[in-house]
Image (cartoon, rainbow over all chains, first blue to last red):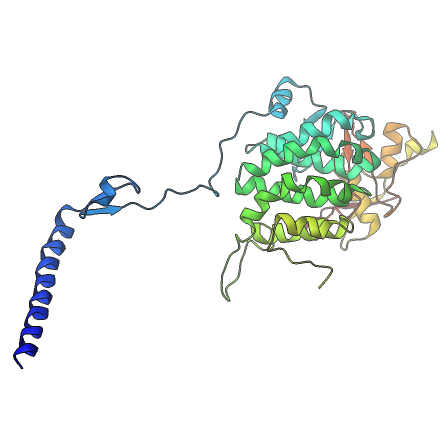
Length: 254
Length: 88
């Protein structure tokens, strides 16, 4: 009995001690707890809270730089004119598109994809649309020069620019034969940003996503673009997309 | 030159979209009444059409700039009623 008592009393006292120790700590928590960075000497102290890691900034927009497209337009060296009509979605070309030097002008217009303001972004978008529509077999040899402007535009991580660039990419792969196949070696440049934004989808539950009709949902746009890549990219397209975007699922094989 | 005298007798607005309405829409966007007037003004015999769909491909405007049109339909339903159909 005595032994038991002796054994129980120290344990009790130990519990008391803990309670005693905790109370002042709780008191310190409220008054003097300081925040500091991890892995510093301060972080070892009892009354400190370690700050979490900083944001990596994967979704952060990058600043735009002035583009060559803007410079040339302001100098008046592009063969285009703005047409103020009721619809306002056409470019008046000063020369026939068939006579344009695609090697020079197509990369230049793609460079304008980085633009955010009117009229530059309008001219770039509409100019690319017209040139792809009427390009035919002149587009294929220029593909290698288009990759850097596309990559620059995507890596701005601006929502509006990404939307427009994705629509341009969808048009590009269907613009002529073999263009889809020619893009496959450049997936490493184009797809990383798509991988970042692929899950940016609106989870609206059973509500209605009103941007749907205008195709402004980045997640859906990326999915569509990847499917277009796969359909027009030949046999090796799928495995190359899967390599860059592991969560992609084939739209043909399944 | 007999063609140059041709003037439309009447005009009405299109009610429903069709291939002809689509082409008229393209001519009127470029600032002409229709193919007849375009040929009169520009003194050309042929207008370029898309081989796949038969729609007008390219028009030269009065200020000598060019309008290039898509292969597919451009005239949306909400604009069909603005297209003028001239009768000769």
